[in-house]
Image (cartoon, rainbow, N blue to C red; front, side):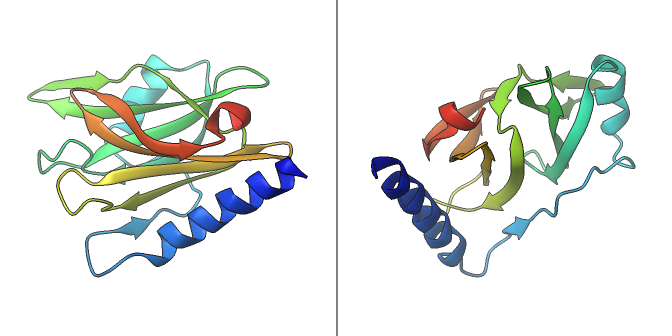
Length: 153
């Protein structure tokens, strides 16, 4: 019974987050892989043995340039997420962060009306559903708020 209440609470929170958007630079990313993005080739070079599952594009570090988020299959039972961005002529790749195994989604929301825009990652693993709201700070994902991610990653 507690599990059903928790799942219902998570779904309600996600619906509230999705419905609390005003006019801003928010955008939802459809599940796809942007193979034409300039940074995608760098992912393929660095992670040639990993299967990409989903990409998202936005300016996560507020430098005016599009950055790339990639969720990829790390092992047969786990997925990871990384960010790729440019600093001058150099492409930087973040440390991997756990990502949902199934039904993964990436959304961009301006949660707090200040830069940079926040990243919402949601998904599941079996019956476990979870989400996390991340802000990009000092080259890494900072988990601002979430629920159930430890069970779906």
